[in-house]
Image (cartoon, rainbow, N blue to C red; front, top):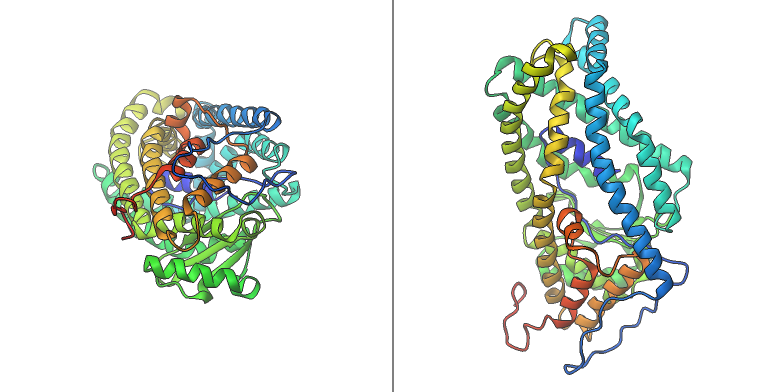
Length: 439
């Protein structure tokens, strides 16, 4: 659900970032949580799955790959359909008939447009959830899922109404420079969204409880990792997220900015991983903050959006010259032109996906390095602990051991589980006194 909000924000010219870890889930039989020690002379243990799980992992992975690419093409097709059959112009006419005030028109037009788009895309969303349930990644009931979908729609409507109102006000005042001024207007909204997201958005979908109330020993260990990383996060800003009501995947992360910064550990993580493994996973997530990945990602995406807005400005004029009359779009300032702009950004999002994901994989690798270094010496065999956590995450999430290079290049936001597990076992800067991040 949060992913859909991010895509909408990027589509309208706002890029926001959310912390992420490899998605995994607990299987029917939990794997062993005790790593074995690898001596310096032993070869690293490769990530592997028993035959029954390997078959299931390949089936699940390939279904997700197909769904991803079909979904991208389908999203582009839906927007093209809305333009071609004149739905956008019809919604514009209804909005204009409702009121002469543009503040009222946008409240009518945007929800009609987005609900139509999302309703046409709903079958794919339902199939995606069916896939998650089939492969035991989700245990969320369908009524609960639809309620989350509804909440996401309402949040999306509110965000899109605000952005569309700002966008078209700028277009009317500056037809030639709107792409730049809208980008400038989006920047404070990016920061505000990152600050309020853990306080306002996350609690709408999951329940949070003080971590110290249930896991005081874990909090004491997390405080050591936080202190080592130099992050000012006191115990009262450490929370346990009740994820087990909906998913089986483990996760731990740091979110927010300034006063909203907090540590979050999912209850599924506590039940699945050992304390050292939780500390490593958390150390990885903390690395995103210590290494300024959140800030850098916001800057990277903001600059990318600026470039795409500039390209979109020229492409939109070209589209309206060729097809504007048949789409019944009067001019660029017409509400009915919004699906054309969204169509362009849907295409741009698909084409730039490898670039964004390559950038993401580089950051995730750096966070893996930081995670190993920040927990070094806190418990024995940290490299084996990290490697075993990847094995567990891979088993429970049905990660494919040998994904194709094309798939990894195009859609993977993290290095493959096989690569990460191999790196965890072989990374040893301490023998030469050359750790990269934590001296």
